[in-house]
Image 1 (cartoon, each protein chain N blue to C red):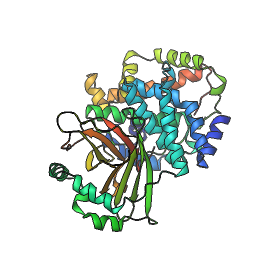
Image 2: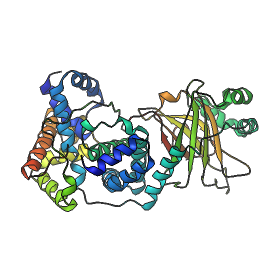
Image 3: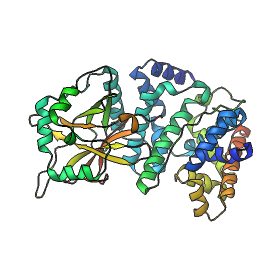
Image 4: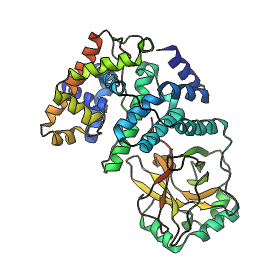
Length: 187
Length: 246
C-alpha cells in the first residue's frame, strides 16, 4: 500500500476529516470519471460520488487493508452507488449483499504511484482490445450499463451460461495481460 | 454450490452483474470456501482496473466543497438539531393541509408522520436522550447550498429533520410546490414520511416524523406538487445515508 493511502486510512480511522480531503484529492477525479461513465449525467454523477464519499467517511472503519487496495475499494463503492442510481432511474431494482473477499495469494505491493496515469490507461486499454468483442461488450453492459447477467443474456441473445463464461474469461484475460505487460498488480 | 458454479458468479459479482437471486447462495459458499474468496478478490481487482481505462473527467469544484462541508460538520458536531420547540410542532401539524394528510396515509407509509401522534405527546418524548443519533444531510447538485441534520431516537423512533440553505418555494400562480421527506428502504422503495415546513422568521426548514430508522438505508427530500406525492416524482434536493454499508 502506498504511503499516501496508508496515511489516509490512518486519518480516517482516527476520524480526522483531513483524511477525507486527502482521499478526495487522491481519488475524487477517478471516482467522478467512473460515475459519469455509468450515468452520463454530470449532476447524477456528482450526487453518486457525494453519496459514496460520505458513506466512506461514515463507514471508513469497515475497510480492511487485507481486502484490497484503497483505490479498488473506493471505485467499488462509487460503482455501486452509480449503478444503483442507474437502475433506480430505469426502474431496475438492485439488492446488494456485502460479500467477504480475500486478496489473491500473489498480491504484490502497490506501485501504481510509480506509473504515470497515461501509461496505466494505455496499458489497460490495450488489454481491453485483446478481449473478444463479445467479451468486451459483456463487460461493458455489466460494469457500465448496470445490467444483470440475465439481462445481458437477453440483450445479447445468448444463453446465461455464455454470459457467465464471457465475464469470467474477460476478467481472467485482463489480469493475465496486465501482468504480462509488467504492470505491478495493485490488489 | 460447487466451486465451478461459484466461479462464474464471482466474475459477475466483480463487475456488478450478479443476479439478486444468486447472492445468498454465493455468499454461503464464500463463507466456507477460502479458495473462492481468493478468486473473488482476483476478479474484483481485475474489474477495479476498468475505471483506469477511462479518459479523466473533472467534477465541479463545488462537489469537493459539498462533501467537505458535511464531513467537517459531522466532525465538529456543531449542527446537531435541537428538538423542535412545542410551538413549532403545533404549527407543523396545523400547516399540513388535509389533502397532504390523505397523501401520507394513502402511501401506506410505515413511518407515521406527526399527524398521527399529537403534537404535545411528540414534543414531550422528543428530548435529548442517550439513544439519540444524528446524521448530516447534504444537498444534491439541484440544491448544493442545502444542508442539515437528521436527529432520531433509536428507541422511541421519532425523528426531526432540520435543514438550512433550501431555496424558497415559488409562490406564483397556482399552488406552491412542497419539499417532501422520504425514507428509503434498502431495496430502493421510498416511503413518504413528512413535509418540510419553513420557519416564519428564518431560513430553517423542519420536519418531524416517526420511523424505525434502522430499517432504512437513506433519507431524502424531493420537490413535489403542493398536494404531495405517493412516490418521489420530483427533483431530489437532499439525501443522507442511514444504515447502508459502503
